[in-house]
Image (cartoon, rainbow over all chains, first blue to last red; front, side, top):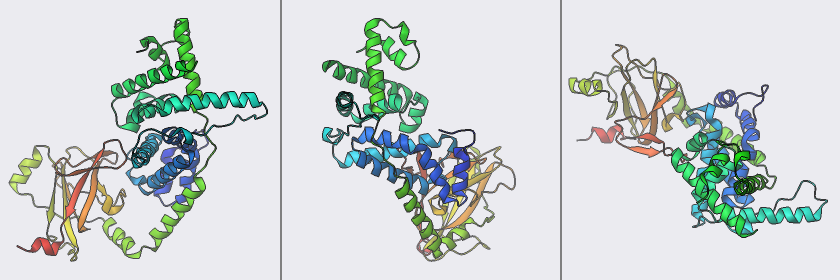
Length: 184
Length: 211
């Protein structure tokens, strides 16, 4: 989130390229939560996601001068991270993520055990349905509905055309809905 | 296949309150699923990333010869390129080209045994500035500016580069990244969106001079 008092991405990029490497920490703090969420949903494993995001951020730092449009830095970072996630998935020789790797995040208020269990079951169910999607549809759904991106930004991130992305999102919704309804 | 109205509502193109009850239920189910997926384990990679970045910075400072090469490459140099008519015609047709020379023209620095001269030429009528960034100068802006002294839209400049393969792009007017249409070879920029950098292969001047 960029506030009025925070330097813009363009300003921070200029500082880093000017030799102030520590300023890159501003970008990490700004985009790390979203990138980790995206990678976790793509890879299904928080440790693998952390590796992918760390590698992506270091790569972004090394190649920051190649960021052709710093105004769209967020899209550029997601693109690098998505690419890194695909490499991780390719190394596993499968697009599917292991259900055993999916974490079950706890509620902030853990006092209500039943609520925690119910929520954990719901999360596991949704994660199982997401994990069953092919990689491209999983990515499209996560970018659209978890990261809240527009189709325009998704196109920048993925390199795919907007009609293609819409089709992937639609197919992902259909598959998820069918999976969720089957468990009702 | 689900009702298109549900997709429209999920894409923000239709008020979900207008949906029939069964579609509203599906809408709520997908919306809730997305909200559940927003929660992930609290992690941070900031410390390890910054540690690695500091190491990179230290390595860069300690890299004497590379730094010297970078400084040398970053010095602006103007080299006159005499275009033959056939090239002039080709470039006037809106083409950009890059030629590799075995050695520098008279007056220019002489390349070493493992270096060659790359000549960058591009046709950018009306451009205010054209520069070249690439893997050879760590994609640094302002390091290698092309010249158009006679204002005919043909921008050119030379650089002595290490022999081997280099990726590069033109930046026109400081903001527009343009691949060299006549590079002949291109390589994915590695960021996964299908964008390509132009590819240049520099032969050592000594090898290129041999018949």
